[in-house]
Length: 113
Length: 116
View 1 (cartoon, chains in turn orange, blue):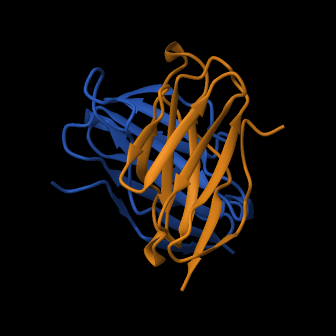
View 2: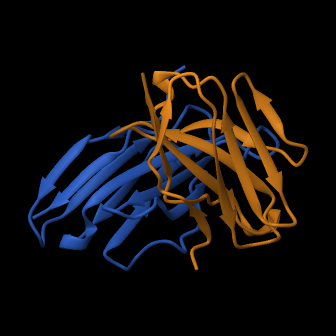
């Protein structure tokens, strides 16, 4: 089983629609969770951190479910520019384990007119 | 403020040759990380420097890979001799020191390495 798992997609989304997808992680002691966005042949860029209480940044909402060990990302009112691969990233284990990021394989989102 | 920079952007070498990748982190960032993405796989951690010290090198695939960060500024990753399976995109990332938003890692554009 992979340490961080994502549905690879693609999720084909009509412009203006809402899309949501999840990511599961293996280590229940994990403390830090992120969504990164990666455009084709570019570097990953931090989209948002994910906090226990859930958090929102404009059209993007992230949730953490510790009991079931998954995080989610919801994109409302999708724009064409939201087309990208969304990477679920976890710092597995406790704070003492260090800061290395563990990546999921990415979920590809294609927003179409 | 300049972001993380990497050089070269692309490198094509033959099996058995040596290649050295360079990363310049964001100025003042103590933490420097190397990651790699091989074709069809997820991005994987290679190693982590805190200033000039190797904090964690558990992801280094074998002893053909040597990373250095002399003086705690830029870092180099040398592959010698290169093998076909070393092809991929090598990303460098940096983050501030402890207590200054340590979790947020900023990535460079990557070096695309092709070993023929």
